Image (cartoon, rainbow, N blue to C red):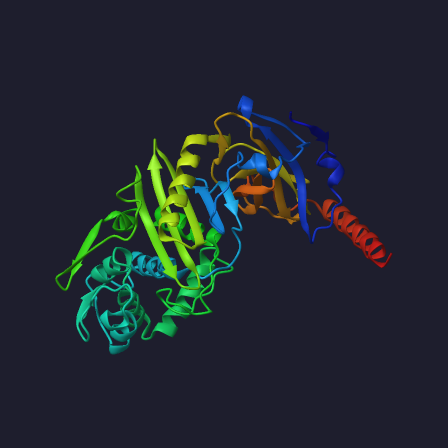
Length: 419
């Protein structure tokens, strides 16, 4: 049963402090009828066990997300930082894809296999390797195949040294690039995920990285589905167990270290719907494959994508300081879609959050906050909001009134803080 409580209208919330994030509206939806209910109402949050439909996994940390919207279907210790092992190679690959797209490097550029790359990540190291010969030169396109298909540690070091001059310098660029694409917690100590206390990633950020790669580099992403690669007359098959055993699987990366355990980032498409799964910290290699498959099967069996708001739909208003109008309508930068259970039992809460009031003038299309949709206690999706129309600077009287209002609010808040 869906329970509602009335919230104050947007108008009655005008005098919230301008310096803090403001909750200006609460949009509540029940998906069973596929209709959005009126704004300014709230629904009692679903219990945690209801959110996942009673599903659980033996993986210490896991997440399952919709590849299109980023909507979270299941999570367990999703923000816990763990050793990513070879799954860290996804960050190395992303940076290489990025540099290729910018034209800073070319697929045919050749990089030398240094003695360090050979000893640390090549045949003498006894770990996953491309088997590139010492002092040989290998093209970027082949090094990428070695890193993705064969999980070659030598491939990654060669790419790092060839691009940045040294692996530490490349790691600096990896970290900078990670922050640019929204990975705020991940840390890197090398280019390949070999054991180091400095390598830490959460399954949430690994999933975010995988989704970014799939959406940003669709042609390059095809490398992840190639089932084998031969280099130096040594044929190796792709280490991803899903490619031959799960319908629609086309990526991405496995990982293992003694301290980190077995992990995997996987993705598959069925009936036009892509799911991305990440697990980490599993003790047994067979259990890793089993848990990944069960998560994907559960997701495809129980969920479907629903549209909540069109990209041109006004879903709320932001308070404007010194504007011709006191509010500006907000629309999502893209259609807001969320994954919901097919049985229609999901309860969702959507909140508009922004920092305000927004100083005039406001141009149409200006980024103003986000709309966040929760499924019970879990954040399912977050989409940027933008101004739907222009709001120019208002009259002198309007600016004076807004200024006086903000001054009174500031004084009031300072007094409350002393109590």
